[in-house]
Image (cartoon, rainbow over all chains, first blue to last red; front, top):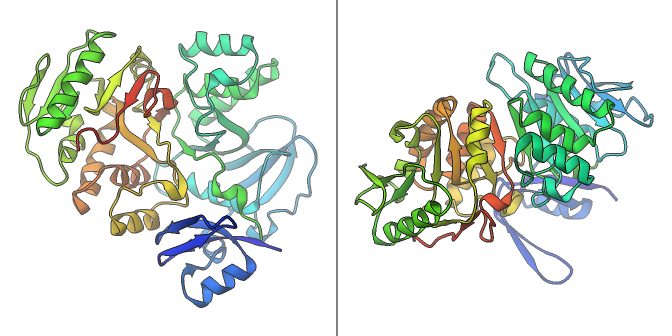
Length: 222
Length: 195
């Protein structure tokens, strides 16, 4: 059975199996199954789902670089988004999704993230996007003692949120090329990916659009 | 910097400043309608929801290049210098994400402002708590848009900030919840104590 991400256009109250309810207001997004979606559509409670993404995304000079175990390279065909396998963090396109295969990923997430970092004619647009690993997990909660010490020495504090480095959206700029190079050098030298990412971005300011943990894109399934 | 209008906010600001003094001897400025002991004072008009017009004008009201803003209902339990270090490293703004995200966020806005905000923003933005913020001169364009966005409803400031940030991103360094939370180990935020 498919699950769909839909947007409320009228107030909606939904109940779970325990009887608890959640009220959704116009503009809220939530996940539902086929039958509920059909009912909500009949009542004109929700906007349509993926059509808007297809209509508003252009995949020119954009693609997904897959790191790790091979995956089918036609996953994003629906959006005309190129995919290729790579051995290391690099930016082959003007806008690149760096996806470590095994991390949660959907074509919709890839496209929505790329739209966030699309500069168009606006030089001040976001250069990168990344999800938080969780809203409560901190740098002091992850990695080895040695990694934590390195981060503490570099940044002076471990009460920093942790990013999910399994999927990153990066627009190629001087700053992001520097950030990706520095991060890659640390990781190639054996550093923990997440700590190395923190050490890199907190010392090299970048227009990073932080997305919530479990960003909706993770959950979108056709 | 603090913003304090009204008796409750003055009392809260005084307590917050006293807690700050245990850790830092930084100069403190209170913007509002009455002086608060132990701080410099700047009179500023109060428009819309109490204190919000001053908050979206902080960049213009601050006498310093690098500024820390604290809500009056905060209590400081530790060192806050990391925010200034991140500004010195080149960040424009240092903030803490809200504990409430996704459908639980922005519930304090009016139904209309929340609906319009969610429609105007890309899907599922990270929601930021404006109760603790460090900012530098690079945040000025964002503040200008924040004022514009706030003028649309003249109510709460958080939705307006997200809309402004969407129009003109600046570099934002995030700190964890210990720096702004009801149980924050560095900044305890007693949400609503001024209301």
